[in-house]
Image (cartoon, rainbow, N blue to C red; front, side, top):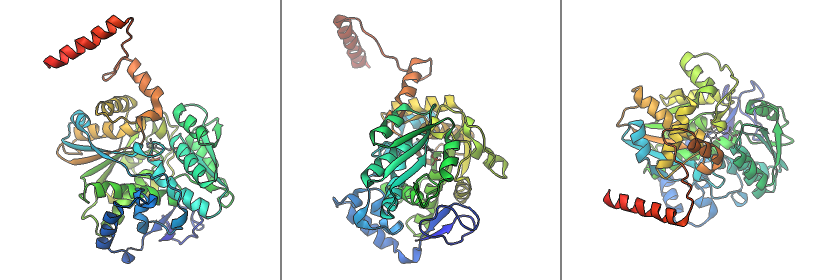
Length: 421
Ligand code: F0G
């Protein structure tokens, strides 16, 4: 694997973060001629029977497709071995027939970030980093803190002091990170992190190309579970756009290696109050940052760092980018709960987006669609509680019972009603 500028293709040293020639983001390029697809499939099948951590990890079992790192010193929590669930209620809600959820919230720290962090922290530890830093709306912070703890690296996170999920901050504190709350939003935090010297501290936001290499393997996890059968559409929420870049890269590499025969189309869904990429996709030109505003706090991002990479991937995948409003996200999140699955608010942008795209005719009702759920339902319980307390289409209330007899009568009534149903 060689590290190049994603803009001007100038080769970069392995520890650089930005291109010395043009300032662009870096990316790894896979040397395809060294890998045989048939042999790789056989290797992947064989690893299913192994109990070794790196074979059970949904990142490291694809290590032939990752940057070379010492296999004896991998920092892993068995991440990215994530399930694909049929989405019955969600499909009916969106008016589509064949929909599944790829649930990345079923990761060790409850979000998709773990797939990238295992690689970023393995690299950081192997290059002798003592401190790792990130800006975050909460999930990157929790994930980095967990992997840094495992690696013996000190974690420092910059998060907005207000307006992010308390559960995520508490989780990050649990893992022992230094949490710096700033009087500003994610974009301000990321600008500060980008000004740090990467030779002094490891910067592990998704501008770090090792993160993207880890996250691209989620495309392989999805395809492998479908016996390398390509869905028509992959629908995912977009914030800083690292994940869009990673999925696109993963699918392109699988295609180039001959593991799949076509690319899925990619639909990126933004929250309406934080949708500079949707605007850019529709209107063209350069990225115009916005002051982001949405209750889906994970994707409250106004100046996405990876927009150029993501735009190339969406175009290569004949994809689309749209925005949905906070109310649509809130209802879609509750619907995903009714499937017995659940997710955090930002993740539900995928189902809200699917509904809008089916209504618009962009996605056909009989298309085979995978919705990416990026974070676990327990990542933001305050949001869920508020939804169920307010008047909302899928709100479900607590029934407070005063005494034992009433309680038993209620259960009995329900049993009778259901017996007749
Ligand atoms: N969904 C969730 C749950 C997220 O936490 C994020 C990003 C996204 C979607 C968007 O992914 O940035 O790759 O386009 N969370 C970051 C964080 C910003 O700090 O946890 P993206």
